[in-house]
Image (cartoon, rainbow, N blue to C red; front, top):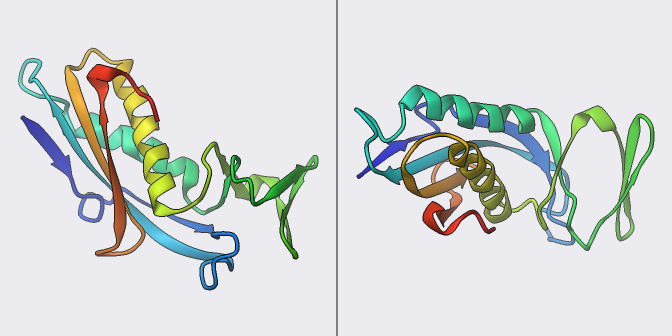
Length: 163
C-alpha cells in the first residue's frame, strides 16, 4: 500500500538558485521553483501508513532549508569553496562568485542537478521517517525543477538508507 503527495498541488515547493559547472547553458547562475513529490510505501499502523500532515511537515522542513538560497554542492570536484566569516568565495574555472554566507545552502552532494537534489531530499526524508515508529518500506521522491521536468529516485528503507 502507498500514499502520495503531489508537490505542486500540496505546495511542497522551494525556489532556489544554482548552477551546473561548465554546462553551456546551466553553467550560469539561474533559478527554479522546485516541487517535491513523494510516494510512501508501507503498512498501515492504525489508520495510516503515515499521516499526510506529518509527511507534509517533514517535506516542508527540508524545503525551508533550501528556499530562497543559492544551493552549493559541497562535494562537487569542479568547484573550490573558500568560507570567510561572513562570505563565501566559489571558484569554478575562470568564474568567481562571492556571496554572503547566509544566502548559501551547502548540501553534501556532488552536483546541484535535479538528480542529486532528489537523492539529498530522499535521504533527508528517509532519516526523518526512520526515527519514527512508522512501518515504511520504501520512499519514492521526485524533484521537479519545473512542471513536467524532474528526476526521481527510490529508497528501500528495509535495507537502510544508503545513498
